[in-house]
Amino acid sequence: MLLENTWNRVVEWFKDRSERGRLVRSFNETAREAFVSGQAPTALKASISRGLPAYRHEFSAWMNTGFRIQALAGRELTKAEIVFIGEVVLANETLVRRLVVLGWDTLEVHGDHGRYGCRWCLADYANIGKFIE
Image 1 (spheres, rainbow, N blue to C red):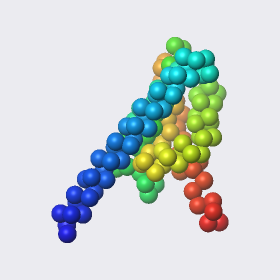
Image 2 (cartoon, rainbow, N blue to C red):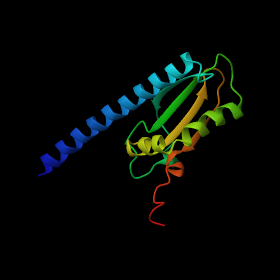
Image 3 (cartoon, rainbow, N blue to C red):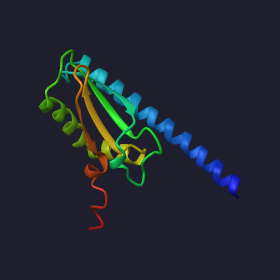
Image 4 (cartoon, rainbow, N blue to C red):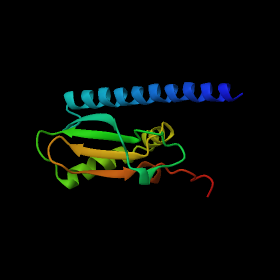
């Protein structure tokens, strides 16, 4: 019984990692096409980061819980520009919910120059429990 439970956890962990990788690749492909076609003024690239322990929730992965978006602008972005990118992502409730159930708890947005970015707690934007209220 113990061996079976352990095996199921290992299988589930690899399945989640695979789904997380597919989501990152899909985001990057879509962002690349949006930039090339002129729909987006800045090229974006997603990756996985450490995340913030303060933003953990019940579905958080045990490590690498941050979904990081880097804006490749060729210059330092203003805080308003970084916040705008984050708000565009957070406005997509389906994407936010997918990020949450796949174990991410932190959205990070950074530019390719400069030292600062912004972070958001994804659970705050997933409208979890809105039908229960």
